[in-house]
Amino acid sequence: MANSRPPEELYDVEKDPHEIHNLADDPEYKDIKKRLSNVLDRWRIHSGDMGDIPEDQMVEQFWPNGEQPATHEPVFSINAEDFIDEDMMTEGGSFQGPALLRMYGPTHGSSVAYTFESGENPHWLLYSGPMEISGTTTVRAKAIRIGYKESPEVRATFKIA
Image (cartoon, rainbow, N blue to C red; front, side, top):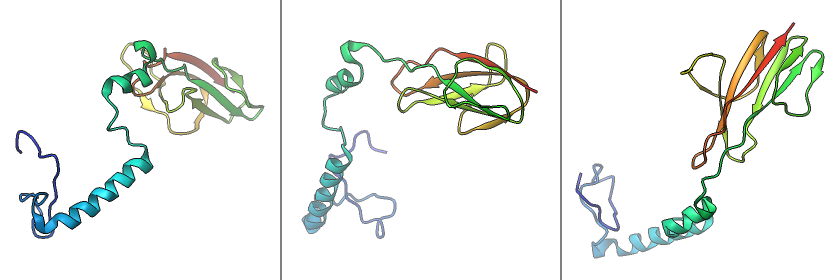
């Protein structure tokens, strides 16, 4: 609730569950503070924590020459009674059912959002795994990754007989 926080904090959460009394500067807790500091340092090295890298250097790493990278368009794959797609496709087609539709975002770390709705403001869903489709199904999809421009929307129509 304070306007600023001290550089270090240490609380006895059993005696002080609301973390009111900071013990970081109490000489009685010096050894505990040192041990926990060493644990934190080892974790930061092991996890590849980037907290010590200046922000301008981090931005240059992620956006070379100040250009925001773009997420690649998602692609589709269909597994149907008469067709098993080993490759990804960007368009739909006609297939014999039953059929499973898969979506993939080629940009490492991206997620795919999709909708079966038409119109300007559809409700987007997060793709999480293959889905059974039937009849004539038009899917709209886009790939998204934090820090990247989202991909252009792609559309594919699948006709399942």
